[in-house]
Image (cartoon, rainbow, N blue to C red):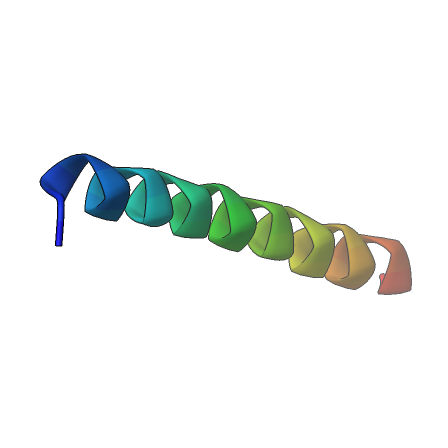
Amino acid sequence: MSSSVQMKIESKNKQFMAEEQRELYGQSHFKI
């Protein structure tokens, strides 16, 4: 497995997790 492919997958996962966190934060923020 090429390391550049792994880095691409990792950065994609980080981006996805960041968007999920922002969405969760937005939802809890609006509930208050």
